[in-house]
Length: 212
Image (cartoon, rainbow, N blue to C red; front, side, top):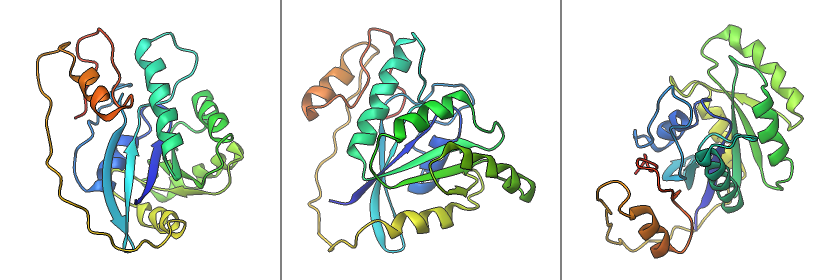
């Protein structure tokens, strides 16, 4: 089994953009509207000769009565539990927010390798602003730009240092199935039943599932 890296953080910090850059495809929906990503979204990538899985997650929010945000929190926790390594994405433009502190409080309870990715550092002036994130008390950080890719190589170098060397194992090529249909037909419930876990959020609201 390859190692699993979970990408977590509050809404609108660039997690899905970072995920798409890692897997080298635009699979995760990216939008400026908060809460676009809901379910856990999986992909594979490799760096420095090591292959690993990546999980994109929705924005973690505490204290909301919105049904989606409650379900998203559950999905984030499942991703953290499943992962071997955590990348905590924050936004240099906003600095540390109360929601960042909520995520930090959650991650303090996790005994796994943790990397802070200070996103949207698109120029040299932003590098100095990133120093603020030392105040999270979670250790060192890496400055990146998910859009143009700057700094992501250094971050991945650090991530792959804690990924153990794996013997190359040939995986059987399994068939892939697509489950399609109109809204509220029970597609997500069907998938969850097949795989035996709550991979997809299920509600009676049409359009709950967005990413494939």
